[in-house]
Picture 1: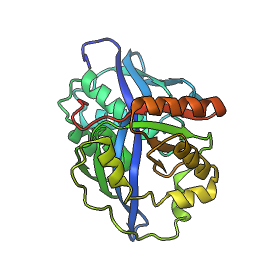
Picture 2: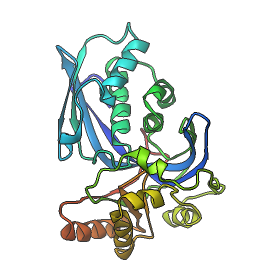
Picture 3: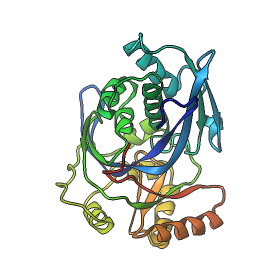
Length: 295
């Protein structure tokens, strides 16, 4: 990112839980998780430019579902950085969000937007902050925001605060959401078993087939309760499998599902086929970031 530009732009990638194991429940009601997380090259686009007042506007297909007041995580991230660095945080900014990811869909769109805002502000205000620094600073905004600040393959543990980067290749992937928002709390309430086995040990995964083979011994524990609320989830997973996905699963608490494909061409063909039959659904063929890709 060229920090001297008058207008700065940053990708807010989709966050995909390739595996999500619910391993326990704390006394305070928070669930303990273990999750293998990746981020895609498709996502929201956030821009920043100097302004007379700090504002947020939204464009794009899913702009209607974006709150533009102080409850938005973008503005909350801005306030967190301004409070932490009052001497460097000078001047107002105008945020413009191109909202390409569906809202309340299990792919961390709002959290990724907040992390992108923090990266933009660190650049604009010339704050010497690493991804780890931002992850720590953004913890008050929720469990997904710190991992979105790192935005590369990782395993998240605890309530999402323990982040371990892992080595993974880029993965061809198709994202599908049937256009049904799904709030997270009802999914956790519908989860029958709160204590489940942890992720298996992560071995060396250097190819797409290695990753898919390892994922076969994992699961998303939130998929069954989510599908009990939104039955269409099971149908989406079946469609992805029928289109040639080597592995199809729900991400996060849903209702977005994903399919991993052996090749990018195969992912594109599957997305085109699904979009032709379901033009009103959110469908995107993309790839995930590999571990070595620069943030």
